[in-house]
Length: 436
Image (cartoon, rainbow, N blue to C red; front, top):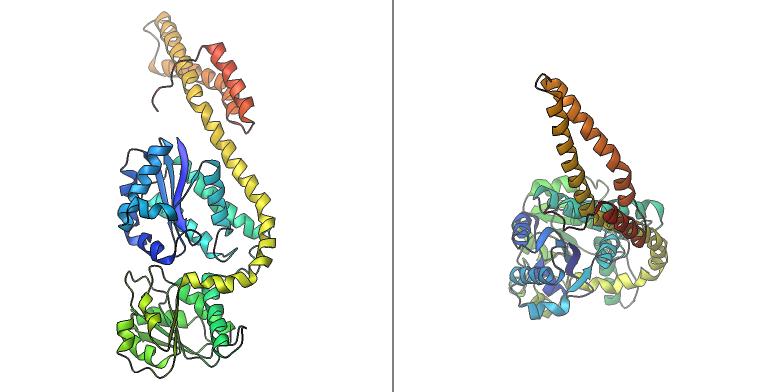
């Protein structure tokens, strides 16, 4: 068996590639089933966010398994494997474990130390369990990743003042508004007419940061107005108008700054839509949705500036250096957590040998039990037979307890293999292990 991760992220692929591989929650079960349908894939879990698509797997054979995952990604995106390959990364075993821990800790995020990625890893665990695509190996690894992410944020300073994609989007707006006014600084947004399209988690964070940056009022548009109103109720100090998505054209005509973050699979704002409007001012569009909510051609129109998640790098780079120093605190902790998992994994190496030993002792127990029962004669009651059988099983379990515990305990691989060799020689356990 072999642990591997295949994926792409903001570091390896532009948003136009990432959006083609985005897997919404409503289709996750089908995607996991298609992955698991390949005989090479024993366990699988998928992490799909605006900045990454990563597939964590337990494979029978590394090469054939990676090929199977690549074929899945090709079918999912509609791109040939050759087109995808330059954007993909593949990590095996120790590197795969280390990568997952870094992702959960926020060390691989666009915004270093962001907190939202941990909730997305938790969601990956939940979906894998609900759809029965993870087994004991990935279940342990993924849950350890979640606990590691929590530990990093509790025991280090990385979570202190951590920012998110939403806060970076608001800072990008501040920077671009400032540049339009002739200064390369973040300026307050008190003079902007602002709209937010969507009412989910990202929209909530947008409102939180817009309020902190001096915004005087926001229009929230959503398919369900009641959901927008529930969101607005959590921001009593910020004037929020809630409107249906049908009012989008009106907002695009009257607002100067529009953020989008919806689950739409196709762009809801296009150049064609904007061309038909009688806009009163210049318009800045900031799209933090993947797939994108704003089509690429919108930026070609005069008076329209359009940005997507890949454009956030400009503001992220401004405060990344300080956060790197904080990230250094987490590295030792991650190395410790990776070591603990890998020691547990190495302990699995002894399982086939333990099974062979148990089978051998069980055969001996059964033979000697039958001899003893035959000598006791037919007058032995059913209860007495059960007591004798339980006694024989108890003896076997007591004999096995110490060697099994010692073999599975954390220890250098060379030391474990030496102990396994002694056990093999003493009990002549050199046959191939039975199928699990």
